Length: 308
Image 1 (cartoon, rainbow, N blue to C red):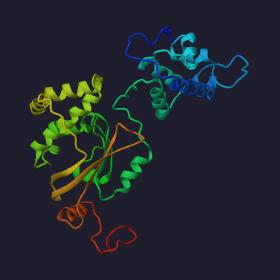
Image 2 (image 1 turned 90 degrees about the horizontal axis):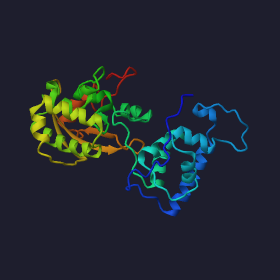
Image 3 (image 1 turned 90 degrees about the vertical axis):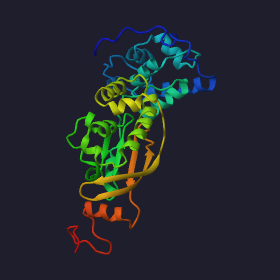
Image 4 (image 1 turned 30 degrees about the vertical axis):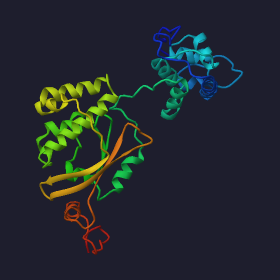
């Protein structure tokens, strides 16, 4: 096992902004920490179990070593004493106890601390989410991360907006595509209005992740490469929308009119599912189904999936 970093004897008092939680929350925090510690064996965290243990689980001093805090301080925290704790130290404790995302959120809630946000480019998405998108055969669907990076998409989305297989991380960013990808720009007949709204909504996302290096790098890149982005960004406008209408001039299908809607994902709250639907029986619906190779209404497909 690697040598631990020097521990901090007073990990929560660097700033007076971290207030101690109320008594009920401290008691629940103590029970929660004790329970999570008890379920871990030394081997689970890369430690050698060289001594006989009277009770299962890690010892307090072992958690303290893993979290790089003093044993005395951690004992006070686990005993429900009124002490302050910073987000960074609480994150180290969560890592030491191998907490999953819901457990980590619960830990921060009990401690009265605003959770650390993960890197917006590294979200853990449910494996079944791609299966859900694939089931939406005639509905273009995509999942964005908080930085507006495209994380998942289905075949319908690829055929309408362009396939992103093999694209770099930057090329999968929606804001980058809108301002710096000429092929994507040509898809939108109302580009000026769309660009303004996208920047206003993206600023709202950036505000939630102020100070995060990946956001800052993307914004700097866009400001340098796109005068149009820079002009809109410098207006400092914000806007929020969860549904609306979008026009697409597709090179094969022609003019498509979509109703788009966004949905939050409980298991990945920083991600957004966006769907594009056409109105039943409309010219756009018929053109989309033709583009996707769908059978015409009233025509039954054969066993190979082609119209009989």
